[in-house]
Length: 447
Image 1 (cartoon, rainbow, N blue to C red):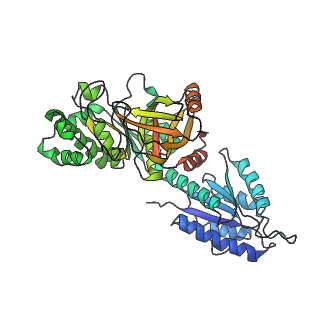
Image 2: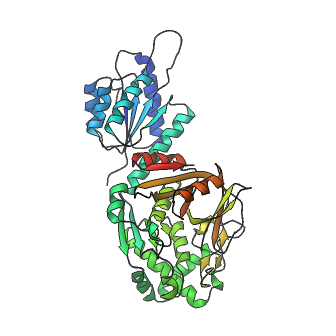
Image 3: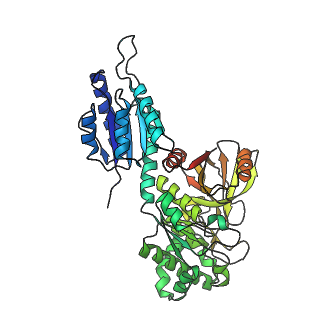
């Protein structure tokens, strides 16, 4: 199986101050090796087209970090583009090590202008550029974020996302085409009818589901208070979903929920989806495929479950937006003072569903893979803080104090026709998501 690889490509010419360049070369290698285990590097600076081509022959990268170790003309970047027309490039210019009225030692920035001009002639997607020396915190932060974006892009190629059932009437914004998912993101979309998993669940005996019921009891608070038949049927659903995911190599699911699981099965699927999120399988409800994809992207960047919900309330005084859903958040997101409390669905009055306010966090990222009115993909990104709030409504909720004006976000997103489901990612993933948008040539709306 192919491993993720980044390639450090330091280009230049031998007519500048090579002692200064060599120092930056060594520091750059140390930085990149610390950020990615599988960093390919040349044995020496690439100070001729011949040396560049010899090195390029050895590479199969997912990201190229093209650094002007000194000035280099456009012929160098043309060779890189010719060999790797579709591989994302981060262009890096070094700061002049000394400004003393004497010799220009590197002239790296002029080289970056030359390379940037060439790259933009070849490619439609935005070009990402970083300026500064390897030891500068801002440089380290940006390179790290770009590498994480490239890793995420690479992981999408191995993602199999399952659409379990169809979107309910009026919720078509979450419906995806397998060809679009594969072409745009490299994601394979698998479809299965909800009734297939319902029938599978019905066939299990109580004994076969005991371990799943016990696991759920350890993750939640008050499951024993759910009526016995609903509790047993929930365990059947949990086993059906867990085994389907495991047997088919599924990394994310977009599951139909109402009305089928109330009318045809008698027990909601909400808590099953919440536990799947804790198990590392991004799971959205109302069969929102792009919602599940948004959650998966956030989870890959942070290693933590993401919240999935509707924006339901705006508090101008706190500059906060409350996100809510019926009760399918990951159990680990619950406030410590309550835990993942079990309740019943707010409309259907059948359980088990999850009932809690989410724990606070200094940094969260609101994110959505959406579609513009013309059918093209777009990314919504906004940063904020998850406030220390108790449950706001029946179900699961989170109040986010946004970094920019919350009322403006609500105003602009409604006017622009954004979908009513968003992922709230625990952690600051905004930069990497923006760079991913650039790599995929998807328009980014960042607030």
